[in-house]
Image (cartoon, rainbow, N blue to C red; front, side):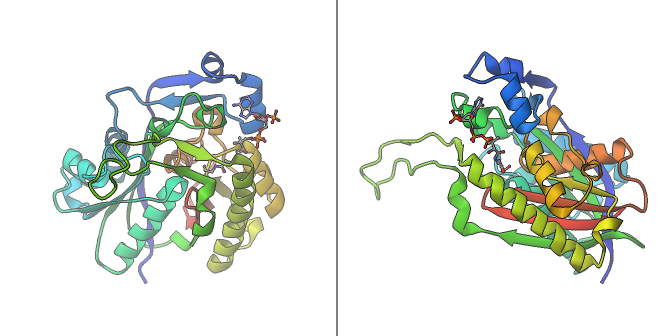
Length: 326
Ligand code: UT7
């Protein structure tokens, strides 16, 4: 089977920084609590006019430029998002229009914080089977639009952002192995609930009774996050026939720095091999790994020839991992 790899990366981060001190003025919290329990110092907040598709488009434009692939050559666009501008059209179709990728098919995938890896692994199959040649994979979430700003359990954790890559065939290296898993039976641990609205088939309901805000059971999620991400790393390395000691860099989902420390301990891998940027951006849902990968490359934590593991965990519950030879 053809080897598929990343040809170019891009990101977009909204300019507005929102610090823990700003949050102290809104809810009963403190910089000390947020920093020590999560590692987050600040996060980015999209401007009122910036929709998820705008974030996605800007990250995509950079990835295309870096890959030196013109938009007409892109024949597949997949966006990992759980905060689309609207139920439809998809964010992917909006990006297709914005970049002028007139020969592409386009759709979104819903895998929350695992959205980038679900999209990446799906796009890889399209290229390997010959259905697509160049794919644009985007992870974009305006996650703060799902936040109840009175709920301190959640509002301190998240931020907005987007990351993207262009995938295509490579002569050597590229994506060596993938692993995907879902635990639908534990989906209640993190959800956005919107009750059914007006309908002649549901006469009791005249309007939405609950607003669609994220609710989560943090402590339970924490345990599943550590166990499932550590397990995903073990399994994907086994598939790639690579030893833990030979991994150069792990880029995990950035939900909590304590989760990352616990994974390092469980895997017996030095923490300095794991890339962390949660302090600057918080949890950006699907975009977290995409932005972390971009920065790990930019700051030379990942160099040509390195063996890199991406590992994700999110609402669903869903986890995913892959191994890339850079
Ligand atoms: O990306 C998708 C997956 N997401 C995750 O995997 C998130 C996993 N969970 C976590 O990262 C952590 O569980 C949280 C960061 C969400 C919470 O940290 P924790 O150490 O588990 O705190 P906790 O929920 O056990 O709460 C400890 C205390 C409680 O007070 P009492 O009962 O001990 O008096 C909370 O009410 O901290 C309180 N608390 C806060 N205090 C100040 C909860 N949120 C806050 C807050 N500021 N924002």
